[in-house]
Length: 502
Ligand code: ADP
Ligand code: MG
Image (cartoon, rainbow, N blue to C red; front, side, top):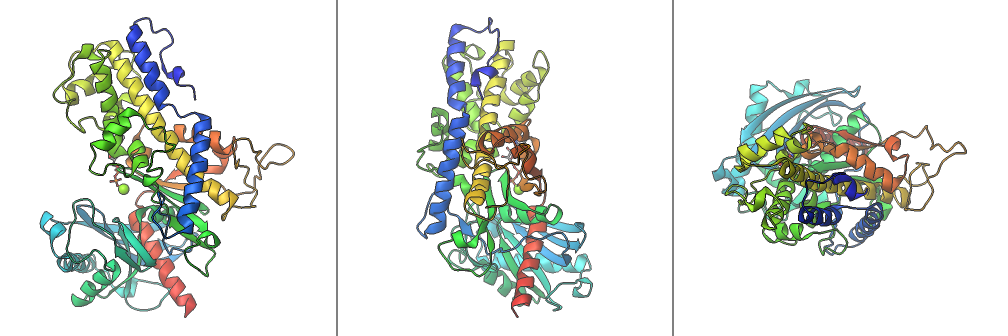
């Protein structure tokens, strides 16, 4: 992509200084095709390092012990639990066996008190919430059909905190995040803590699986789209999981063929060795609560996009290239510019950029903007938003590359490029193998869902890295409620493998 294409053609109204500054910024934020290729190669390299050692790497590459994908024929009812913030969600998922399912859910508030209370107290609250859900929704094990044949309800648990997993139903909490700090949890098995609370409170539920939301997203999508290879989150944060050939997981011996790996890709290139980090990103990183961690996440995800944009706007203001050099108290505040403002501005196709003016007035207390000011604000949003989408596509492409070169997609005739100058494997008519099912990428998150052009920009970058067939072969799709449906499917997979191995 040529960054100058975003600059106005006849920018007669722009001053020389505006043109110079904006050209510089456009160059800084532009990720060329060559750069995308270099980043993809570096990403794949980092993935392989993470798969081959227990030492902490930039990509953690955590084995999830989820060793299969649903195909949409699974049946049965499972409970799902989702804990990741102020809400605890309890769901009953009924899988109907024909790619159809029903969900039933209730949210319970986890009070500030409970977020800091002893972990036994938190788990008692969760057990009580499940009990309440079962009674109020009249759920009995009689109506529940599941392969283990027991009369216990099986439950899958999506737990969105850093966990070191040791089995599909066991994982130790590494640390609390997001305001939680319950003593007695770190270093202990989360499944065991919950199971003890369920037993203590006479709730006849068995915790069958513990999963991460990326894996949940992939599993949920698999139920309706077979051949789902990647699960990705582009929301408050970003992360991805994919199906790996277990022979590539050098840190353990496994007897299954494939396993989902949680890459924890938000931490890619922590050392800033190859990412096109700008001074605006460095400023954001320095002022963040976790400096020098999650550098990649900070260039992509909803929590940060607005702040990068704000940093650029302030730079332009300080150089008297925007708003006649005047900021506002509001715009001077950290985090005052939100990703959803960028969505409104990027969607503003009106000649005079009215909606952009309204965002500036209403949320940023900037009442006197010229047409040129508004054009510049929109251009900055486009630059920051485009870079985010292209980097998101790069990470997705890297997971697919690893699959094509060394993993479960190898030798399958996908007409995709494995390096910048390689040829796609195509037939004599120049087509890829049409009988190949598409490779589905399951995505959850407001940034992908709501940010204008995010999806189309991702596809453009996927084509640059994986070749022209990528548009037909790779299908980006929204998978809502991965944490509910995905947890239920993980519980099913876990109980099925127990049944099989008996
Ligand atoms: P979570 O990741 O916490 O599950 P979401 O997927 O809804 O939640 O993502 C929330 C993030 O998405 C927030 O950081 C917010 O700034 C951003 N966001 C919400 N709405 C929009 C929008 N319309 N356009 C762009 N970003 C948005
Ligand atoms: Mg979410």
